Image 1 (cartoon, chains in turn blue, orange):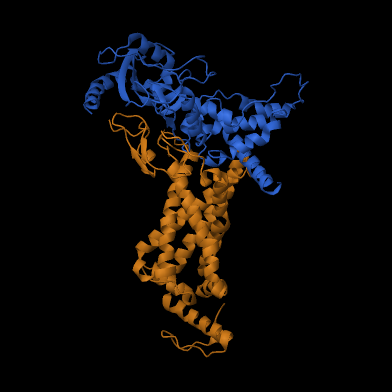
Image 2 (tube, rainbow over the protein chains, first blue to last red):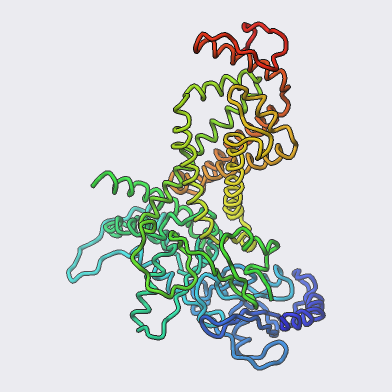
Length: 304
Length: 309
């Protein structure tokens, strides 16, 4: 509480200065000298989170990753205290690996493609960074996204071709079906669709002291499997159910999609498609999965 | 800092206000933590510390239950809503028309009560119970993501809860208990006049308007999401086209509901009662050859042949 009051005073005069600095955010106006950022930090899983504010020199064409690099290099908060460098995840820096997802100014997006100039134009003088809220925090902005990958396992999001002998050439795929599948294949497993989904809620499993890693892992998977699989997994299931070889286990995918936490958890808010950085037609996949599940359920009831 | 989880938005509190269950706001920001919940169908669990027993019956049949929930919203609950609102709107053609519609429904006689329980009340209760479980397991976030679809998602839940309260009040007041819940009871032999008396206070009419419009929104928006759920419209273009169906149904039923309300309010109770009495006399004569009952408020001796039904 005291901390909040202090920082409010801080941003009082400093905030006005910042507004004067970059004079209305318009193009052609003087560039800001500094970038202010507040980061929701957490030291370890299960610990309480806290805000820390930083100030770094402005460089043209910065993105959120370059802010975080500067923050780590300085390891000093805005009020001059030495603090542990902020931890975050990133890899490819070109919106392909999907590892740098975080809440930037309250919205889920990729840190690598979030440009500082645009962020300042939408939020004024300070950029807010928070870890994703639907995944357990490991440290600071790093979250454990294993539920995302577990969901892909659940729906068997692959083409089953493993074996010790030559299967021969696969069936031909028509250009139409290639065009249909390609957008779905661009999924980068970033988790934005899960983060923005009001039906997808956090599941955090805490490891017990007397528990082996394997026991913890299986308990974690069981807990994840009771929750919503998420839009990305539904879309991947539709991608592989549309593939001539992947289709061979279509029923297994539909069985998974109609089990607990499956397609029925979708509430049609359609946030997933709105926040997807790759503009994947997720709601089309969900509706197709709904149709397939309808037919599959009828078959399951009447064809046995 | 007592920040709501998505505090950057212009509507920061929506995230938690519409939410069922007990949530704790962390002292220094961060995500709200659920501390009370525990419904078996739950897909949301904050911390899992015990070994899970094998999935319960409800968990194993979650898909079936949710699909039955979706279906129940259309048939019989939604279908009943359409019939009910259109029947009520017939009051705009005069108390005689409305009375004859009501008589048609009540011609089911002793079958009426089991039918309304089996097809209407129990289906509605099932839809409501599963609906509340769904609401309790979601975490609305229009504050952060104020897209049209998300606003509709939130309104769908809000109107569902309003409709639930309204329908319980509406049935208790008009159908079962009457006076203690405001106004009086609906009399199937004096359909228009008894309803008009109940709806006469402005407050009651406003509550009815809110309740009816919420129910109509819930149904027409639910029609659109039902089409996605079952896979009727799958492409974004098809969803946009289907949305017009939803809008048309909403406007039609909203108009019928408000029209019925306006019609009941503007009716001349004495005149309506006279018409109803004459129709009642005819019914009695046709049923058992009894002579007309002397209705207490019968104004003048209008000839029976003058009825217009």
